[in-house]
Structure formats: structure tokens, C-alpha cells
Image (cartoon, rainbow, N blue to C red; front, side, top):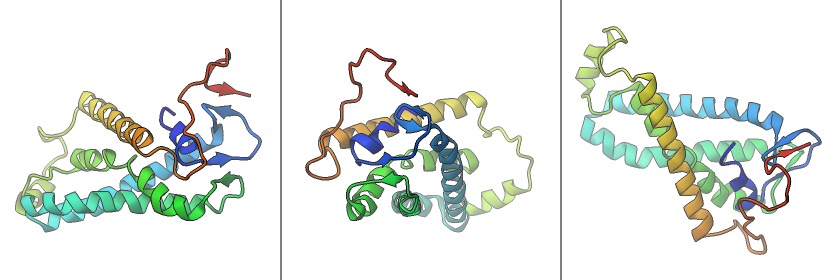
Length: 195
């Protein structure tokens, strides 16, 4: 909800189908976003888990430094190419959207992929320690509490907002001729609900 305006103000994306809108996004898209994001985060956790079980903790951190951004870009590129075939989704420059827009969109996942991975695995354990812990119950002391999960999710969301806004302020819109839209318009109406 809070970060969807970047798709329009920075990437120039737009939906053209007739439906109810919330924060300039068709309401059905919120439901589809849940499925997409669950898929990306589950897949990234599987890949990162393979990494943690096959490398020492130091090698794992080094590999993750390169692998996490690559996974972010791949997830973003996957969605960009898959949604491009939807007839009611449009953006001005397809090539720029695939190459640069996917890098921008990948920043949504840069903070969240490692956090979800850390919730699922302890990347500082050695492969032997992980194998030993695998047989133990899931109620080990390092299990995350609901408060820790909520704090990590909120912190990740804030990092995403920082990354996206730094891009918006530093680089502007995806292509020339497109103005970066203001975050709020003084229209006198409720700013985020349109029927």
C-alpha cells in the first residue's frame, strides 16, 4: 500500500482496467501482490537455505552478499516480464522497464529476503551445527518471537521506503520526459480512495 506510488511516479506504470481503486492501485492488484510476494520470498529462502547448508558461515556471508541482490533482480525481472503480458498494464518503455525498472523493483526485496532467511535459518551456524539442530524441535531458544518478527518486518519496510525514495530523489523518473509525481496532491478529497 505505502510503496505503490513509486510504480507510477518513478517507473511510469499504469493500469487501464475499470475497477475500484485504492491509493491509485486497482484493488484486485493487492490480492495478486500477496501471491507474487509469497512466491518470491519462499523461493529465495529455499535458495538461501541451500547456500547456508553448503558453505561455512564466512563463505556463506560472502556468497550472500552477491546472491541476495541477484535473487532480488531475478524476482523483479520475473514479475516485470510476466505482468507485461497483462493487457491492462502499461508502461512507456518496455526495454527500460525490464533492465532498469527491474533493478528499481528489486530494491523492494533487498531488505526483506535476508530478514526472512534469518527468521528461517541462522546463517552464523556451521553446516555441521545446522545438521545437528535439524533433528531438534523447532522450539529452540533462537526461534523468533512475534514481536521480533513484527519489528523486523517494520524495519524492512522502512528500509525499502528509504531505498526507493533515495532513487526517486537521486535519479528521478525512469525515462526522460516523465515528471516525478509528487507524493501527495492537494485536491481537497480523501487522498487515497477513488471510486
